[in-house]
Length: 465
Ligand SMILES: Nc1ncnc2c1ncn2[C@@H]1O[C@H](COP(=O)(O)OP(=O)(O)OP(=O)(O)O)[C@@H](O)[C@H]1O
Ligand SMILES: [Mg+2]
Figure (cartoon, rainbow, N blue to C red):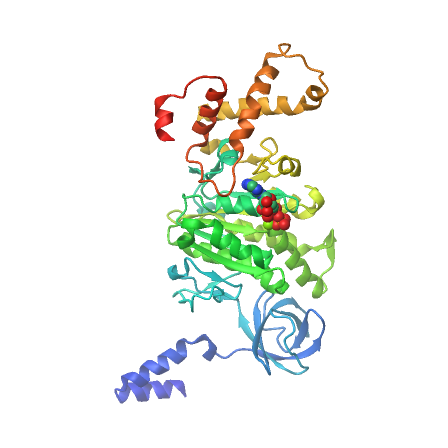
């Protein structure tokens, strides 16, 4: 039919008609899709008969109901039926309703998305009008580039947060986790890191946040970086499917920019809530839990997401990932913290006790590690940091002893030095989100130590300030 219509149009020289037909052919909605019917309905999922041979796990289907077309994800495939988790809970589903295969969920990122906030479906939610779709749709279930084709991670950058730039400096393309209990300062630290000026683009996934925090994060903290940032938001009241999709949509957008050669910062707050969303979806579809209520799929999805960050193939840009991980009841060995720590190239540990002392950001310099720090440090800096760490360690291990007056000054020169210098170091590491990012953390530290020792700062250092 279609071919005959095209021939007709060509022979008749009807260009407009020909263009119309070509557009219809190009429209994915025009292609014939496989369909089935709803067989059973449960609280978190429904089953569809007739699609088992035509869909794959993780693909999307569209369910037609009285209120329109609703998407759902295939979470289990059996010989007779497939299990589908609807994206929006509460949609009216009836036995026998038609369900059509849609394939992978795709987003079409575009440069014009910078400065915008979207939801997990790729729709704008910032009230700034519609967004333009890019020319190349990308599946949110993409996989990472093959490891041997990826360029190496070796270029350091400054985050502007002194405690990180000194003790655990980062490289472009690194994947870093921020581990802490609730309310210790993860989101605040992430917002400070989002202002690093080493990046061409910043893509932020806010998963399961409180609605109030979202505007705060985007409007107050991004500052000048807002123009090069895109936020993907799924708040705590949204469905687990939308919460699960937000980081996947965000990393897909980050990949789009990385492939254009940009250095992208990908921020996810929090990955634990992403894991909770996967758990909710999996439990609803009957997947058995294996560790602390988490099903096996959580432990395959997490590395899949994080592996997508990192350097691109030679010639492309990089995705530097900084993610937050909530450690349940301050237990740093919970299954999500444990499995992510193994996948990442470094972890920053925030201590509740430091926050309680008002030492913000409450980064524990001894427990935090950047596995790529060596590539970011100069030889002198590495030696200096190792010396600083030993001073801090000495100071902390003798804290109780000194408190009860069990140490007499002068008996251990190393400890005497630690007692003099460590409080100065701690003071330099303090930083609030309102402060400007630090341009040169080492110089700040050197100046403070010199001032504490009563030595004047060299003129070059003074000029820089
Ligand atoms: N660098 C900082 N300077 C001053 N105050 C800070 C800093 N970081 C955190 N805080 C204080 O700690 C509070 C909690 O911080 P934040 O919301 O970042 O914690 P969180 O770990 O993300 O919490 P949640 O687990 O609830 O998401 C903030 O409201 C703020 O008062
Ligand atoms: Mg938070």
